[in-house]
Image (tube, rainbow over all chains, first blue to last red; front, side):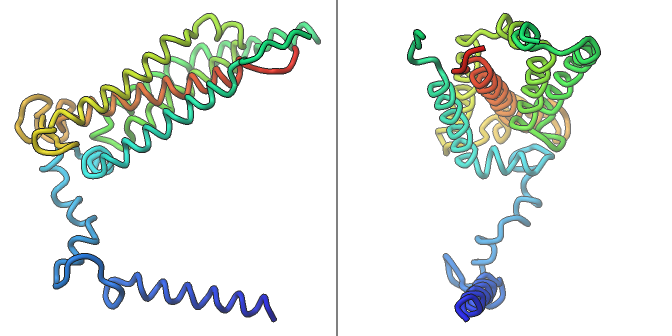
Length: 98
Length: 153
């Protein structure tokens, strides 16, 4: 009984999320009017303007290094921190004499 | 058997194959990095590919050979250099915005036709920097894991 209720509530939450995330009748974030879709769904803009604005024909690199540069900085920082932590933890920091 | 486990390198077949394939893997990784703004791939992927050549070297030739060719300070400096070049190139267009592609929009350098190798402004430089950083970082992590073991041999 409890498991059935849990599964049903999970299904209900999934359905609510699907409705909320639908572009036609879901929640609208940001500016009102007609251009909220242009501000939220930016993929068509990247495909059309990426080559002339950034110059690379690989649109993924255009997005990663120009439009979403802060994300790449965070990624590089995560990599740097992870490797610094690994080297600092695995270093022989105490001489075992035995 | 005991003597063998200390030396920790592979046999003749694996060594010969590794000797033949490590340069090819390195060239392929360098291609992925340098053509990151034209074809699928980029700094992260190419750097990981070149680091794969290092992993193959370590597995095939053993830890002793890899230790001779690994300098901890050099790889730390290379990784820091990659990160600093990345940040410095990002600050190049700071008069307009952080991560503003000044080289391409003003046509200063790397401003060829889209699709050629010398195009796309700072993207090739950033790809090189990130590739260097990822390569040095992964090699450092690999050598740290394999070198600094706690147990007795």
